[in-house]
Image 1 (cartoon, rainbow, N blue to C red):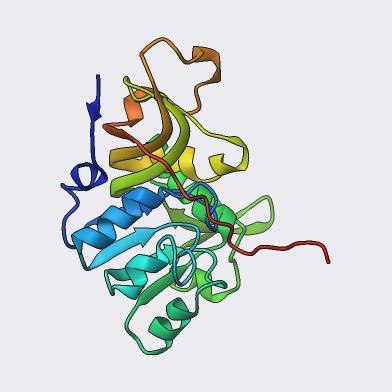
Image 2: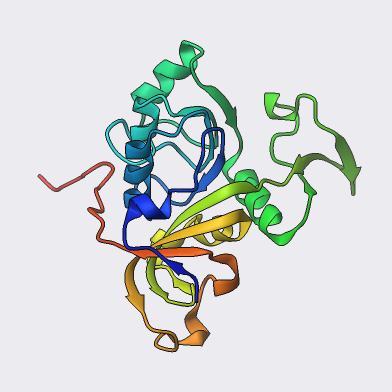
Length: 229
């Protein structure tokens, strides 16, 4: 049995100023939106956030940006957030941009206990500055170090009281690897089941990676709505 919270404020109670967070999702798809809202309400600051992107101006991690709660952002895409751009240009926000595949592997490696790996992505670009390179089979590769976090916040479709998680279609994205790479993983689930009700053959994140779980309803906003004329 894991810690099962009854409020999102309780779920994020241990997240402190200066913490390093990993946050699941891709755009607004599969983000732990209620946990993010609770963090915005809590007002923790000087956070280092590791996530594919920083949401949009008025939703997701963009809420923490607007509150000036994020000190450093490690991600791969920033195109939908004007406040992100403003804070970077004014020097209010430190940013470490990483190729998306490299970011995914840095997180996966962190969860697997692998300290570093070689990749061809970024060789010969500013990404490679100050990093070790090595030749394998006549091709140059860049040494990238793994990422871990004090807390991982993820969103799942289903979870049980043991902490096993199942993700829904593309909302799976970064969530499984982020769940494995946090010292403490907090899972926001759409539906919470009794132990044994989920088919063990279809578990995406085993319970060993999850410390805290909470059930909630998400708005599931659309990042950019496109409709036919």
